[in-house]
Image 1 (cartoon, helix red, strand yellow):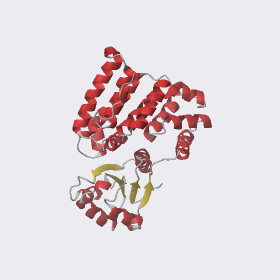
Image 2 (spheres, rainbow, N blue to C red):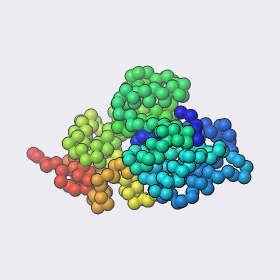
Image 3 (tube, rainbow, N blue to C red):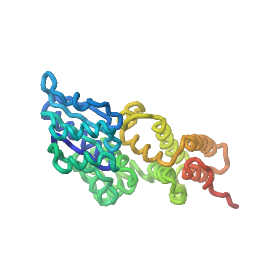
Image 4 (cartoon, helix red, strand yellow):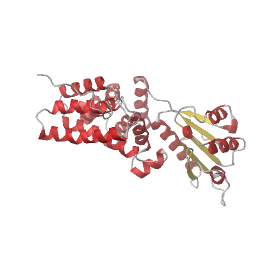
Length: 326
């Protein structure tokens, strides 16, 4: 990765994309502390904004222009960005974030074809465990810290569903410990993986995979997981979804408004696919009822949890609730 007049950051993995853009900014700022950084939203772009930001300033400071949401680009931004590529401004670095899809393909093809002297940084989703192990290894190597192979595998097993959570776990271990990271260290911090398992159950149910979520729940409970953190994990996910569902604007703008990280907004948007406002409302009601049931209002907390999984997996419709037997 290197600075260039135009940098295309493409791919669906938000964690890697955010890091790439942050590293570009830090690299440029190390070269010249007077770097001016500006942000644009391609989807809500107003004609002339790019030209205004790229115009030479009074003191000729270098400029970095970050453009988010190019996969939702307006026609105005697409037209002006293509024109800009034909004659990029001096001492200006245009960074375009495209999270996937066909919208804006003409602009991507132009950059990939060499117009404007641009480069592409591909941030594809890490799907294989081997890639996630490499990611963990790189996290600790960058900090010049030692971690055993067993500890790496334990971390990947605990946080295989979400790269952002895996990255956060690595950073927590780096911040809280001084010695070599071993399996015992991971066990100390994430032993039993109750919280991790809870989020795995919640993520699977939110995605509509009822049978798989029910299996994960029963396995977690059989392993000694407490029902209270289970409901808390569901509540945390649904609460974020509800906030993002009612917000308007680009990812960075919404994140700033709601006090969330950009990756949390992107994850909530993915989770919201197939959901309605009414469905979210019914799940929130079910969460309150389930919380009361497991804290003493009911006699069967396991059934209450299984019923919640059914309601969430049906996106607010109680059509998959398990039947009580015996």
